Image 1 (cartoon, rainbow, N blue to C red):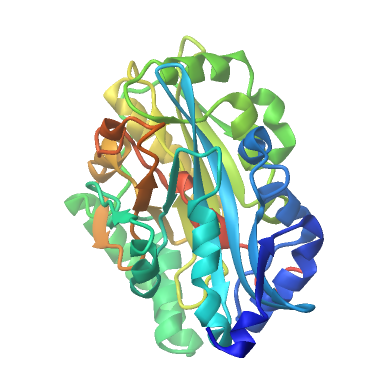
Image 2: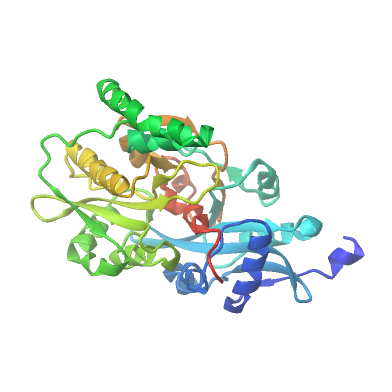
Length: 386
């Protein structure tokens, strides 16, 4: 290590570091979080509070900050036993500080009180560092895929043509083409959300301002999930309410629940409107998806129709589900989805053999959805105020 690098120190993040870290993000054109959103994601995360885990780690030199890695603990259950995992987020180091960047990952990998650490958004470059800590790429069926549906032919064509040319007349041509494309897609079934034929249940929309609807019905749904085999991500009503409470995503995220004719919850899907990522078509991102084992086949289509309706109201051209595995992936890809490769990100996993049964880390025992990772963390506006 050279003399300059030797003056760099690694330390845990404190809540008061928010402004300095956001300045680091701003200079690298990374999405920013408000102070309230920062506290929600890190300090107020119930899983982090349960084990008093670090908020993250940073590289400092005097008052200067040159690197950051956020820590997002998550709670899982298996056979009545709690398991703690953690995913990292926002791994950012200035080029002239890269000699010390491995220290951030070391702190993440050796943190106490977690049985598994992983990332779902590793790049080819960062993956080389994960190998240093015996993390292995783990890509079960589906996690390398992106599932897409067209929510609005008119909005999709208008946005696509508008990107190809700033000419307004060309963009308006999308409305005319949509009148031809939509019936053609319905005929072929290409990327069209299927109709919920013969299903009589009702969708419910739950957002940050009405989480009181997460009542005993959702507790019973959660208890049923706990009886399934394999690791189950915590979907208790209190955890669902926390996920909806992100102040930076207020109004942009919802939990769509499907209620059967007997009043019981048949399925839930957390969705997120993503409109601010440069060079990407605005879309509704499905973050989470889980159905009751007793739900009829048409319930899947009914819940997807609720997702479609949410996208249409917000004039979002696309619906996307990425980094899913297991039954959720099978259900969604069987619903006329268009499959596309996911070029970035992979599940680099390192497991504590002492605490977590090895046979749980396999595609059948750990059903992944997008909310398992940190993709939701970096979707706030670039102009978020600090």
